[in-house]
Length: 361
Image (cartoon, rainbow, N blue to C red):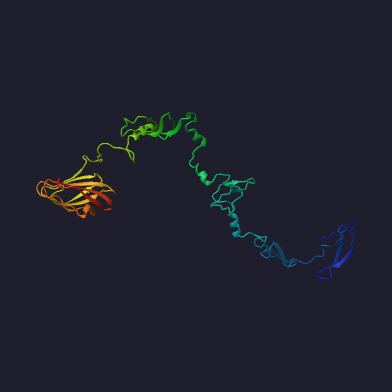
């Protein structure tokens, strides 16, 4: 660079050039910095050409080197690949990574976001520091509780306004709905109950204190007093006194009648419908085999057999396991138009005690 001189341009020192070792050069002292300066006339070499800038990746930071500085300078600029420890240039892969990041303003995410610090199945809220955190169910609604309000299509207050006004209620009113599902208030008077009559809507049904005229299809609700009075007329389960004969429901006479055909015939005695059974032999004679159905434990029943008017009938076999009094099964009286009567008691499964009540009657 050009050397400066003091204001009086006084030469202070002479030297020689380092190019040829003989050419004199003038040295000056800077009056301000007191440094020794060389006149620009001295020169330090001749630059003949300059190479293009060379890029390198050496090192961990930006740097440059110069080779052949006075003749053919080669300048190398080292720009290493940027990393956690290197300052340098971003690669194409780095650009792809950064380009895929969401912006800090109005970011959009194509997939779900996972927060390892959050609690599963809880709402997200912001705390006092505007950080996104889980809303603890001890204080805030759970997802299950939120599902209770699913389906609301307008303000809750609007929906509540469509309900039956509280002003319609008093101490004797209940809420009900008719066939159009519209809620309404139903006033329940004294001596009534809320129910639904056959084919009708929910209503307050009167309680009947007199059941004397109640029919099978009557929906009248009986009072406790009327029910007790009706129950007092029934026979108790234990004890009680009955008058008149007992006729089993479904029969038109006290005894059940059997009229088998001629020849070998089976007669099934049905003890579920009666306890007295009349068997009449065919006029041409019948060989009878008895079986039992419907008998209950300890049930007594009677079988009477009447001979026909033409040919004597016989008993081919009694039902299973009859223990006869005296140890011998009886035979029928071999006289036309005569009756033999036998009594039985069921003593167990397929076991009976048998008795002769009367023969040749």
